[in-house]
Length: 469
Image (cartoon, rainbow, N blue to C red):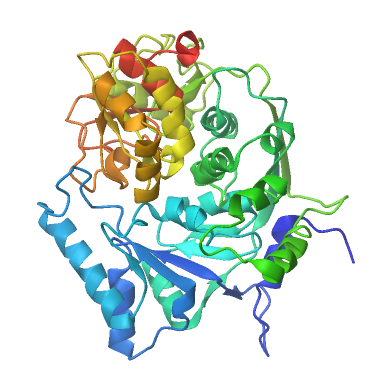
């Protein structure tokens, strides 16, 4: 048998054989698990009702509340009517169709891409989908995970399958080791800035290299989370001992002899020697500095110390995009983003709302104060993360520094809840997208690592975390 990469191995094992398969048509592709939330599930459940269909496999489903919910302490009262209806509808649908739901106070409520791994649901070799583009997060475990549309959510509910065309493969090799003050978020932002927001379109990325092997699971989740921002369908990392150690003993992880058999299978999920890819990208991280976006998409980013690019040398389409972005964010080409004043700071989201992210932020904020000109939100990714942070005293660190330590949810990552950046205000954010108005109408967003966000909150302007480490 020819050498295969991990993407091909998982893909081929999930194609459902059909009596007649037309060349060039999509494959019938089996889905092992689907996560649901309040925003993209209502229409899918409505489709089941309209067609008189039943749930294919309840054991392969899990729902939670995350996108449109408030994160203030009195979150049980939802002021926004649309959000209130979304939450009520999910509760009704989960009850009617007997789908497990992690609601407020369950101990497991949180962002879909945080609770899946922490419960041990996310495992190597699985195919995982959700009506959310950042489902690629789960690829950190060697799973093939990607976002799907609302109609596809309905298809999985009813059949456990969707139609998929075979993707291309890309190998991204992160060589070297991350320097002090530089994190996984900076690494993935460097990739996106290097290849562009369309650089991996149509591909699934496998991440490898010395830097990736040294990363914790939470760092790997950050990398895979933002694969979608360079156009990839998904991103994944081959499972190893770090992966197995993270999964072992979690609520939904296999145990006993089932664990031994699972690990034996998981060890086979590696790219064979001599495996080929459609594209290979190599980036050395040894000299990387903290990254910050300057524009209105994740590819418009620079290392701190680099100048904001101008239109010289850019093609006509890029030139127009650069001009529009600079006009929106109020920056000038050739200027340096370090020192730009910020009024808001956000740590959280499915990209950087896990316990390691909160620990990094707390280590910088400890015995320091958030600038009086900055409003700072720290939002854990789940109830479990919040409880762990409280046990470690991180909540006291944040509150003593002047930050708000809030309840779990997607929060300020996107303008679908109460947590909005006011019009014209500038936010340094650990989330994944800096699109126009993403954090609120007329808001300006700069993406960065939790360390850079914390340092900037203290300074009241975009700042390197190095001086605080």
